[in-house]
Length: 212
Image 1 (spheres, rainbow, N blue to C red):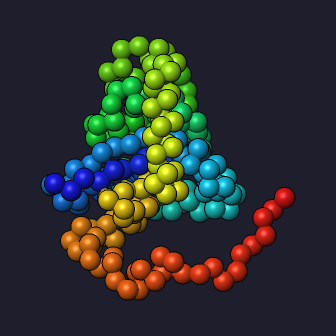
Image 2 (tube, helix red, strand yellow):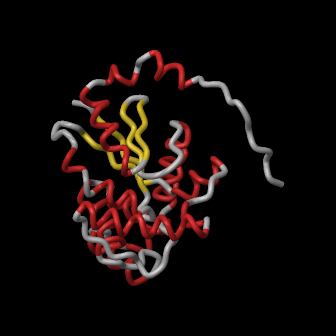
Image 3 (tube, rainbow, N blue to C red):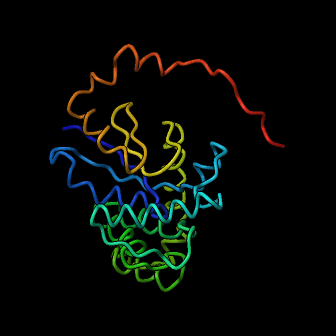
């Protein structure tokens, strides 16, 4: 059975939309759900998130609302965004990131429009995830380390954003990469052509000077 690792952070509306399309994936595809801190990934690669660039933020939110309507996926934006997803991620690590648990967290944020940064919502999330002691879980050193390890692993494998699927060495980033991934699952050879290999090592023609 082919296994794919899905790197996610509930801060991302695109990850929510991506998750809701998993019904299109082959039933024999195994999925490992890996919670990571997007902020750590962005910091490593020196990137800004879409919501940190003012005009891109407006575009991303409008696109999210439009995509949800086009796909028939229920959506209610949370009261503020971006929000700090660190504690929600720790609860997912504590509970064990199964499909049910992951969908519970995403649905709270993007279907119910809850603020996963608020204490009340976190306590409710912990209850839904069946985490017996939310406060202890949030402070647990092993849980904190597991989330850091997940994030570091993602960076080592070249993950630069969420949502990202990784199958062997093939990476598929973004909610709109599903068709590309389905093609890969049908015929991995189409991603090992001479042109695919050429673009993997294409020389850089020009680069911007670092700001500073």
